[in-house]
Length: 230
Image (cartoon, rainbow, N blue to C red; front, side):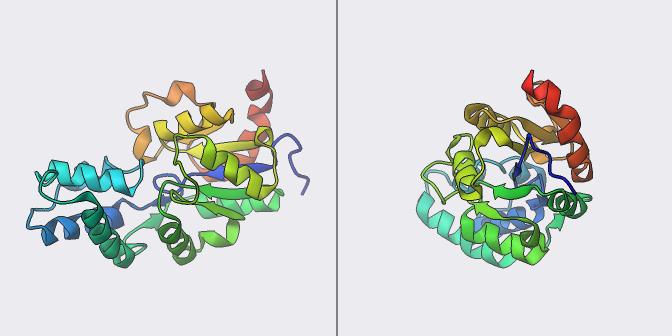
């Protein structure tokens, strides 16, 4: 099928956008806190920490459990990542419509990159285990370049790896972090209605489109084109 000549590539967030990873992350955080003699935090509390990288999630979990001044952050992060390497992809699930949507984008000739704040190795393992890796040309993790989203650098790095100019790319995400990164990189940004960061809706007016399913992406890209360029 003919490729949309205005947009050649789609950059896509991972946690809360393609995969519901909260169960794996909450489980790992609970095991970490248990190791330090604390009670695991409520599910929703930890899930609310997702989106700014694992280090901040670990710090916030320690603080919430009253361990922030008693446990060294680097050590806690190492403990968390050890547990997360085991829980990764065990309880998580691909959101409905994501696989079909990525397949449709591929059939339409778009190149796709995952741009996530999750460490590269953990993200790669998750994408492999869920089968999503087959539909992605590039992965940029939270430790791939010097800065994470909301910095524009990971988005620009993904564009370079895809050999596509930034003005030919869009970002699909679920949170204010994705909106801020896209705005800094001068990319249009589509926000999924079901993600972790979409519940409050505070940043949704700043996005270029709100989508309910990845399956609608090819049509939305074509329909949104004039408005995005206006």
